[in-house]
Amino acid sequence: MAPPVTSSVLIFFALAAVVLTSLWLEAHTRAFRKIGAAATAILLALMLSNLGLIPGKSPVYDFLLGQAVIAGIILILLNVSLDSVRQAGAPMLMAFAIGSVGSAVGAVIMVNVLHIPIGPDAWKLAGQFTATYIGGGMNFAAVGQQLDTRADLFTAGIAADVIITAIWLIACLVVPELFARREQAGATPVASPVPDASSAGGLAAQLESSGVPLRLTDFAGLTSITLGIMWIAEVLTSYAPAVPRIIWLTTIVLVLAQLPVIRKLSGSVVIGNFLLLLFLASNGAKSVVANIVVVGPSIFWFAAGTVAIHGIIIFGIGWMLRLNGELLAVASQAGVGGAASAMALASARKRPELILPGVAVGMLGNAVGNYAGIAVAFAVRGMLG
Image 1 (spheres, rainbow, N blue to C red):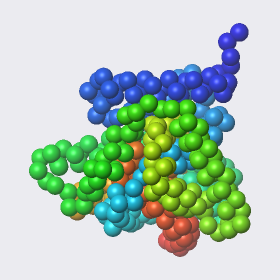
Image 2: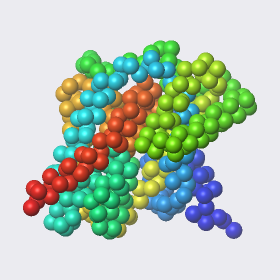
Image 3: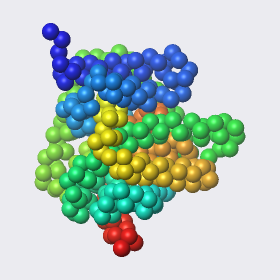
């Protein structure tokens, strides 16, 4: 008898097949090469889930969003040189600040448009969507708990956020191509980080091939190091809960990454990139369009409008300031999707020198998102009377 569609093994198989198909399409077709394997994987998984071939909810997706993506981050960061990220610092902060303002402006505009169909608690959603599109999903929950948002609005807002975040990830993978055309036409961006040929450029190539065989000792070493880092970070977080686990993880990995013996281990970037592609595919699988009916069109359009205005502002102002398109996309993802999505996007766009700046502003968003969300919520409540 065929296994049920909810089988974890079947879902893992489907996502792995999606990633394999996406990589093949990127390598062999011009159209898919333009949008990249990451965006293709999201679209294919989205198609499968909306056709009912795989579920929109599964513990598999929770695992990929949690431990698997953390392992992918560790494996890629083990090959990152600190020298390769220096040039991205100030421009990334500028882009993230523009995007944060865009999220707040978007929420304020959309609550004025949709507060009547949503009801008297619309101001709370304005705060939550501001928070989540500055710092990620954790901020949505934190602000919602603080404002005591109604359970139905809370659940609907989360569902809308999941769908819109996946759609926006696809947009951030594709939009930089428009900036690339301008750069090819001769309008060089004023803030475009240039990868160091010996570090970031080499890391970009390793996203697809390590260049040397993966030995059993390499795999065993990488597995031990990755799990060890995750365990140590958990212990440190338990002793110092005020410090987010991602900060412990990043700090430990960066220290180890500077050791030549660690950098000699083969295959970490390829394995990490595969885990990130699985993570991105799972984002597409969670985006079941039929959920829009359950969510309610008003709340869905609230989230969609907020992110659209955020995008117009960050890419519009970024275009006028001649900022690099990929830098803007990573900064946008750091806010809308969080640090993990920013890193996945930087890897997918083959811009490893943007990984650490993206993670850094993603953590900054976690820190300031709650403050911004609460401020916007109460400002909107006063505005609406």
